[in-house]
Image (cartoon, rainbow, N blue to C red; front, side, top):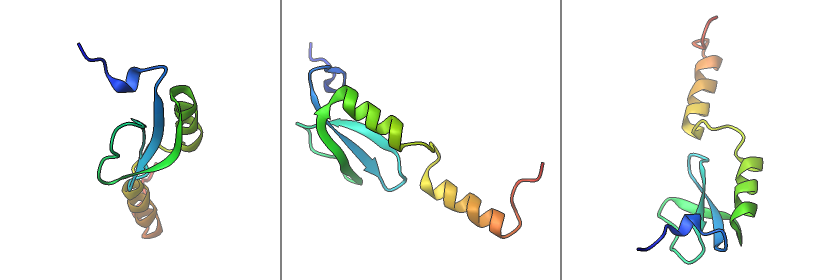
Length: 80
């Protein structure tokens, strides 16, 4: 039975990011998926997860952030 490469505590990983500013770890031995690019690593799993914790501070996709900023600038922001 093959285990998941992402769970290997001894593995070497990259941190990858997509165009929406979403981060993930990815095994160094695997091809980076289309639409994602390496932004950190290769490093151990815990270092990669720490990098993500430090850099991915807003979980919203960038397109949503832009949409909300535009709506606010147009006066269509949420009213409380």
